Amino acid sequence: MPELPEVETIVRDLASRLAGRALRQPHLHKTDVLRGVSRRRLLRTLDGNRIADLTRRAKHLVFCLETGHRMVIQLRMTGSLLLHPRPLNREARRYAVLEVQVRGAGRLVFRDVRRLGTIHLLDEAGWQAYTARIGDEPLDADFDLARFRARLHGSRQAVKKVLMDQRKLAGVGNIYANEALFRAGVDPSRRVDRLRPAETARLFVAVRQVLADAVAGRGTTVRDYRTGTGQPGTYQLALHVYGRDGEPCVRCGTRLATTHAIDGRATTFCWRCQGVRPDGVA
Image 1 (cartoon, helix red, strand yellow):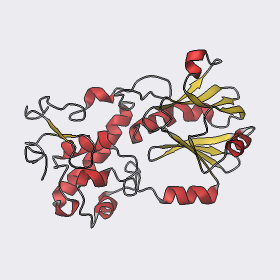
Image 2 (cartoon, helix red, strand yellow; image 1 turned 180 degrees about the vertical axis):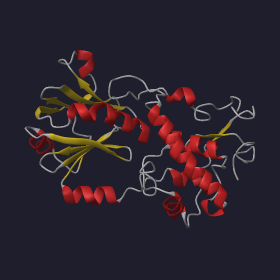
Image 3 (cartoon, rainbow, N blue to C red; image 1 turned 90 degrees about the horizontal axis):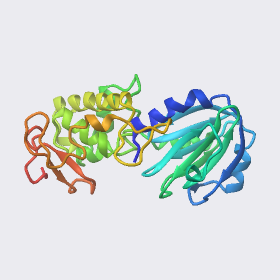
Image 4 (cartoon, rainbow, N blue to C red; image 1 turned 120 degrees about the vertical axis):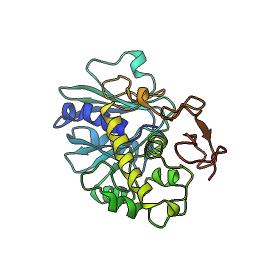
């Protein structure tokens, strides 16, 4: 699933090309992606409206419309968002969920092979309720160690699980939780309330550094993710643990291990560098 760096990359690719542009002829191919809005209301709101801005919140693309509405798209596993300068051919239209003509820029297409993504259309009150359920943005300038500690405070869950909790920290998923924990030298299965202050401080720095590096690398393409220009990201070339089960640790050469015992997701780690027992359970 695209995480903060991937969605941020798409926003940076498309925002300047979409801001101020009028929308025309929206077409919704599939309705099962809609959440809390009917097909008729979505299309009526989009047609003739103007994109004031395109931003990101956590893993979500947020289209700020001139009428005050926000169209929120979550790409999930197989979604992509591309601006096509020319009319779509048959292959480009395959798996298209939403198409809308952007005056002077081309045709904006939300494509989703497995249709796991979602579309919300929110007024101001709906948006405030939506965003209030999401935690702090870890790359915000005012997100400091004190706020990070406050988000973790009191939890008895495994630290990796807490990092991925979108109610606490926005935009961190499995890829970057694995990478940040390795960079900080922290056992992914350690309970948060048992972390030493120095470990929490290292993890705070690691989370921000990993996310910033991944944004600079234009995201991680394992399979489906593409940037806003249709290209794969490059950060997969810099991953230290994610997807490297059985390979040697880049620091100490120990064979990396993977467990699903923490949160049902693949957690890859170096038991030597991160102080994990070889069975992966603290």
